[in-house]
Image 1 (cartoon, rainbow, N blue to C red):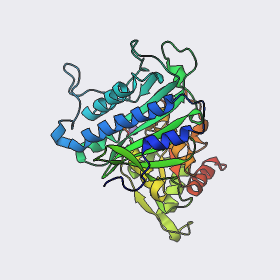
Image 2: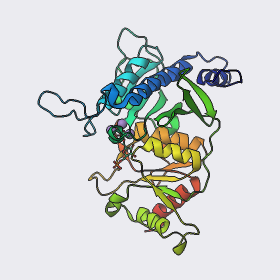
Image 3: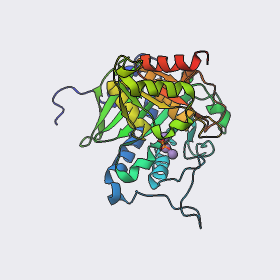
Image 4: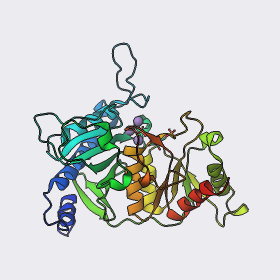
Length: 346
Ligand code: AHG
Ligand code: MN
Ligand code: MN
Ligand code: MN
């Protein structure tokens, strides 16, 4: 489609946002554009599917049949390719003091030949990996934090900042179309990748989540492990008007949190991956720094909520890089109801 009518690109959006900060250096914009380039590169690899030789599990070290990450998960080839893409496309730019990734046990040091900068980039390079080999939407999630001044070698504690400290957050969803959804703290905007121009075009300005919904998302196979407040909430959704609710509900579960988050941003909904007794540490499956916090920032910026079940995700003080946490997010009236059930006298 020729650009005969006005279309705002991601670059233009960032430049116009930057005008709010007259003395801005432009470092932040360069970082976001590099992240966007990494997502474009991953989108292309995902689109090639089996033709690109990137399906299946990554080969393990000698003898091991597949490589396993610090999470104890078998790594897909695309997990590793996506991780390497994020590192190599962003490390040179001079905006970063260091990085952290789901796929790296330790923080990533910026190679000495590159200048260091004032931001930290934290990311889940490929979310929903279990869906790659069955061609279901997957995504990448990223979060930008400020680094303390004068960091030489970045340490774990440099990343242990509550979600409220995030400077920006977003995700790319590799679906029927590739989109980048971004907040820089002034609301949430969605950009669709034009495959011909390879530009992200602003197609969904100022996204707002409907405060109510009749659609809930949870992996119901874990129900025997749930805590009482979640059991009560889900039972009430399933009972609908025949029970305590004034409407009937529908259920979705994609097993790619980015895809659930996108659906919820588009039409409302509530997502639950609560802490449960399945995991002996009872801390839940999802990771705080590069899944819960960035998605939580987006949800709050779009008028929704994100909670541990008991408190806002954004208030949690992280204690470790790969810390897991229970996560509930989406339409604010439903998240508030779930939080009220958790905080009611048991
Ligand atoms: P990742 O692929 O980055 O490890 O994350 C997968 C997460 C999240 O995307 C999804 O909602 C959840 O795992 C699905 O968990 P179950 O397979 O237990 O349903
Ligand atoms: Mn994983
Ligand atoms: Mn993930
Ligand atoms: Mn992942």
